[in-house]
Figure 1: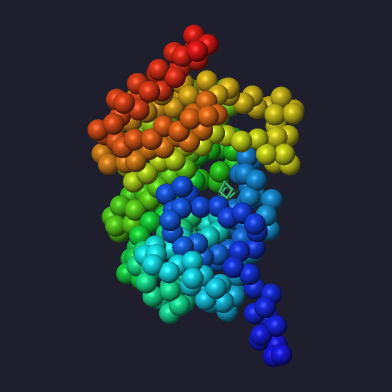
Figure 2: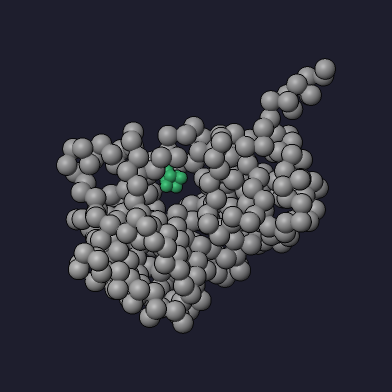
Length: 293
Ligand code: SF4
């Protein structure tokens, strides 16, 4: 057996049993290109424990070949990894070449990114990737409050984040956010709701996916809780935050999902036309909670 073949035998389609996609990408073909995150410092983040690793181009090519049966009939691809957009542009261009060669039915490509990954690329670089099929970036916003971002060591300023959004709008790349209800704990709950609404109104994302803050063992945040430095919000406080945030949103064309409402419900709708329904549903759940129904 040649060395090339034995090398290829060790390559698997996915490294871990579970793969993580934004809910919007559940129907996309997932191509693994990276493990871990280039920043790996956010205090709440479980992925921050994973070693950062970028697969070699031959490995990615082998994975693309393995993906063919799964990608059959699919038009959209999601590049797996916590922030593949951090890769140098020429490397991403090679990956697009590989996708084109082995998965020719794919017309659209999306991936996770940080705001600073966007800012490190020029307009021409991002425009070139758009021409190759890049249509959307999924970005972990978590909060639009600078105090919350700093508390969680997110490594970005609100001003920088808005600059990245303005560039993506100008170039014509869609972007969607993940956010965390309760990200600021009890101490920053009011700021989190109010300033996140202000941020979203300025950024005008295509989609917002809200999840609740999870306390993972072995994260710095878990140690902060043990030390009494962070007091997590209750499910009800998180819902109040999201109700206040949604009531203040002026989004022109945005799909909103909160998939961890009271730990058991999902609320989904489109802004602006379903804003009132979203807010009144949250209101009704809060009232039912208050009455212990
Ligand atoms: S940028 Fe995202 S993946 Fe990276 S450490 Fe922060 S939350 Fe985790």
